Amino acid sequence: MTFQDAQTQFATTVKGVAPELTSSELVQKQRDLQNLLAQLPNTPEFDPIASAISEYSPKLKGQVTQAVVKALQSRDAVFTQASHLFAQISTKADADARNLTFEKPKLILATLADSVEQLQQIRNAATAGDSETAGSKAEALALMLIQVQQTLKTS
Image (cartoon, rainbow, N blue to C red; front, side):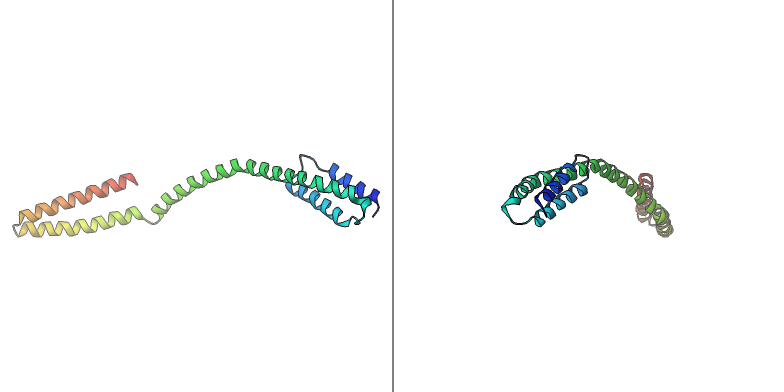
């Protein structure tokens, strides 16, 4: 490699660096400079080019960092919107899952079964003349039905 070849390759690589390049394109330019540095003969004649590469490389790394930060910032709004949409979908899916698992019908069925049992106990207590037990069981049945009613209204 001649000095002129190395100088031309350096100039071409540096001129190719522009603000609109993506981070991966900037990384490729950085690799090109490192490859050129590795190919330079270890003689004083090539020291100016080696020095120029050493001075330019940190600046190029800074541009890569800026490009990555800019790309991440542009994605932040998209991620925020996606997160909000995901939360909405998750909430709706939870509600749909409750309906699909027949949570309400199961609750109603269990309440009906308990109500029938409670009514039989109330009837037995009333037939036996135990109005105190019949009254307390009737009150418990009424409370249970009110709780089920409130649960069904809120879900």
